[in-house]
Length: 281
Image (cartoon, rainbow, N blue to C red; front, side):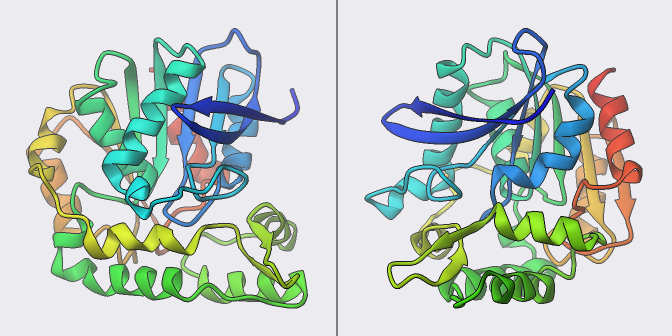
């Protein structure tokens, strides 16, 4: 079944999402990384669509979803609440969650909190409970902050594609067609007609100002659903020490490591098969 573009109002925010599969099939919600979009999950969603209703939203300030008037609405707490409202708006009483980077952290918090009775399976793609507190991940966080704070703009879309190829070379290997889709699905026109990544530059503000009001490791230990953690072997966001501690604190967690950086692109069978098997368990 082909992908469709849908819109829904979650709370008071209009969200765009891609929908795949039969509307009556069990839902899988896929949430992207900090500056990315729901279309990143196209390859995985296409594989899952035979068995699931796959829903891939653009969180506020990204893709085709509404931008916030106040950067405070981009905090993890605010985005988590929007995700709850998204699930409420679509009447999702039970769901599986797949999250890359930020999307994985959001899923962890929701599975331990407001959606604990609804999330049945959790996939966290290349992220741990508290990347900002890990010295080994400090350089990766700094890289992301610098990138988000200075969004590039190009006269031609091919210029943006070249930028993505250079700056997302830590991803798993992608074909020319995949890079083109990656670019087209996450580009926006600026006021002067240039092409820029499809996110509000204010999404970086919470990274600079938000303070943790809960112990992230306590949240991790509170997750009481089957969990799959994927890691890029060379990731500068999910440090080896964090990855090991996650398994020590929750020995039942399933893990897979891939020869890439941050983050596995979920665009090849090697990465998708474990997710398919896990979600069906």
